[in-house]
Length: 625
Image 1 (cartoon, rainbow, N blue to C red):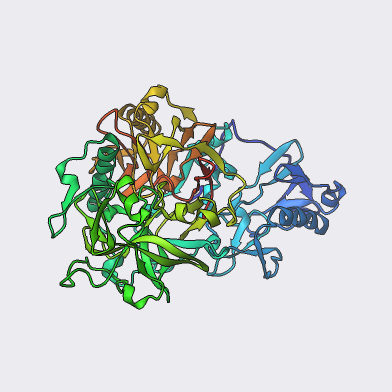
Image 2: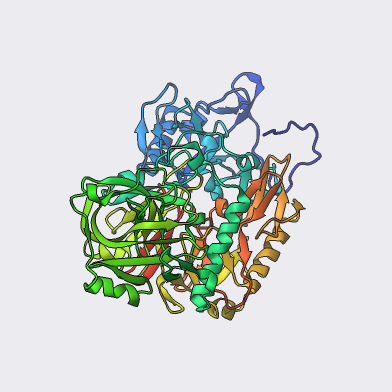
């Protein structure tokens, strides 16, 4: 950043400037004296006698780094500050700083505002994060008084930011229109980090798993090939296939392309109408006794959990390449096949799966919208989540698996059907689970089962609606969209006619055509100062941010039935292809009747709570902390 040093009165902000008299500083004619009359922390004025300031006096000095206060004034400030920061881990001080905190693994931080009152009624609201001074390379931060302007992942608390006289964004916030995110253009550049910051929430409970981006440094997939991200065109192409197959399933228009053939010429009708090729996020689950840790994509639109199994067909070649050793059921003492005559096997058909028998053993089949499939034995096995162990979980032991699964072992089904993992563990977790998807691949999120893992007090719920005739998807009722604090004029029937679902496997949120058109128009109006550029793939609204230091983008929020408003994180509004092509991260459906889908890019950093027992889905900000 640069600031400015200006001589003369030209360019002074008449609307923002407030003056306080220059006071005499003892016997000095060089220094600029000020009369401090009070300090406030989070708008609460501290009880400091006026003589504490008036006796020594005060100056403003551009050459002093750290603000110095009279002992009694500093003690009052420190006490109030520590009370507001009681939820964070204290750390050792480094003179002259004595109030420090360790933010290792913390993704965002709430810092109290500090204001100084001067003679004449002038109040300066302290910028929240210039109250932080980094002491070393580790994320150990000391809070004192406004000093250095450093920015970190907690920058999202922009409602506390003030840039006096620097940008038009400050004018917006000063006038009460805190409806924009200010983003460093450098954040649009590819990350060169090879480190991984773990979510503390996933380590705090035995029913939590670390959620990682499958292509990032946090991934357990060991090889560079497995972790190398596919190009953006592939990601968006696979996502479009995924979305089309969801639409096909929910519209009951399954075409022959959504049927796949086993080598024995057994037709498998698509069950989930989805593709795992675009699945971004994986968890590590222990399967068997002794447990075999495997990386699984988790999917709220699928029910049956499955993994690849040895011997991979008669000739051992019927599995796709997998990074981790393929699960061998013969090495597990707790594995058993499900009998073909059992009610569980019979229920495959009623749940929409392919069912067959091999001798007395039950055979399952699942087809996906990109012609990927898994076929194998329906079995029972022990599953281990962190330290929670569950016996006799029904799952698919796939010996004939083909498709775009890109090195992962299989899938963890989190849908609403009876075969899903939440349904099978409902006696323990009451059919409740939550997750937070990290802001970037350098961080982890969490997948937590049950309500004892620390659901946020700020969770707001919306009822689960019926997604057409599907028992797997979690339906939502969207009732409005807001851009830059202004609700868009979209008739309610635009959303209610096709309905909507939330899906962890869809990357980009899809909206009804009229809703997307309204969102796009409002977004473009608020981005008119930036250079537009050509679209790409499913994106038609893109910008070139080359040469810019900061970018201000309008906030976007969704309103759901029940009065629940969800503000999309700044990382969920734009999709970065490169710094010269940054696009609005939403897309329109092809038809008015296609179901809307709230995708995983828009879910980043939000704690999403699925309460199957209560028939509701909840949302809370800053969910990965």
